[in-house]
Length: 218
Image: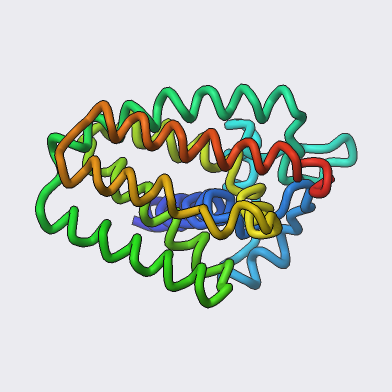
């Protein structure tokens, strides 16, 4: 029983740290200090240490020569590759979701889109990024494809620390919801190919802005 509880705690620590990566709670190049993380999450250092090692093994974090663990810095070619993969798998998930989306699910996505617009108008970048994540994953979960969803979570774990850079781009913010509105329009029509195409445009547009700002994170 004690072993099971210990394993559960390790899994919880792993899940919490991975979610921080996905949500942009950590910054590119940030050194992750075990003791500080343990204090933040209110648990002992052992589960945090094991969770970090697991994330290093998955290449979502990187161990330096001095044994410190950092959030990886993405090179331009690596970011471009991630973008191409995201376009393929997230587009697929969106297309699959179009025919499986429930009415309640659609209402939730519409409400999230409205919240994103309010966040833009209020200049609340943190709220916008949180809602953006919720918007995308609400769609992907309706694909009913857990293996695909886990792949997308891993991809967001790599790119998540960079997403906050979008809010530094004055030209991006006013039109950041344009593609999202088209995604919702296509979902309302249950038009899978149109959902895929709109998701591809959304990812491509954001990636273009991030590519310009990538150097500022380093």
